[in-house]
Image (cartoon, rainbow, N blue to C red; front, side, top):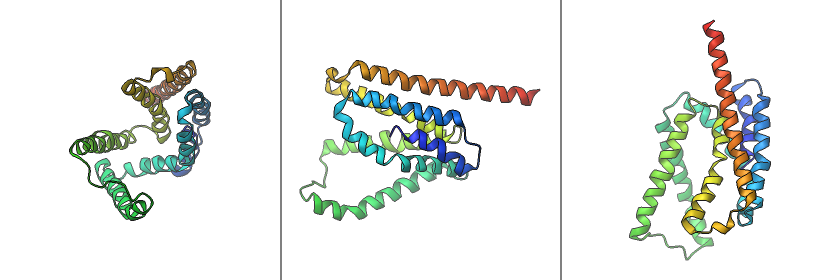
Length: 203
């Protein structure tokens, strides 16, 4: 998924008919080797990265599309439509899934119900809605650049809960520091440009 920012930097100007921002393209490219360092030193995640790369272009398209529709529609309505559509699609695919995995239990236990509620509301619906709200104030590129932090704190949380500290190597910290640096530098440059534009308007 490291290439999502790069694809977004290319696609967003096409969707909104704006000038290509070379700085965003460079930042998008810079994230790729940084995340490679993170996952190269965490070999257990190689399969996930390969699968993630195949969806990077579509993920970039998805964010750019959401940026476009949040200008016209309420984020809560968009959340309902998109997640409800996903629920319908998964429901239609369920018979095929059960043919491939016939032993899958369909009725969750009591504990699983609580976990599913937490995952669906706290970890999915709420963050998704907040991300749509944020797209009204930031570019699709900025949103996707920030999402590059997700695998980093995801790995940290997983290691914290499963107590597998030995999986963290120096390469992980180097890659994570680079990604953090890119995100904060981009935020600082963006804020600097906005301040300069405000001063020009004021004068």
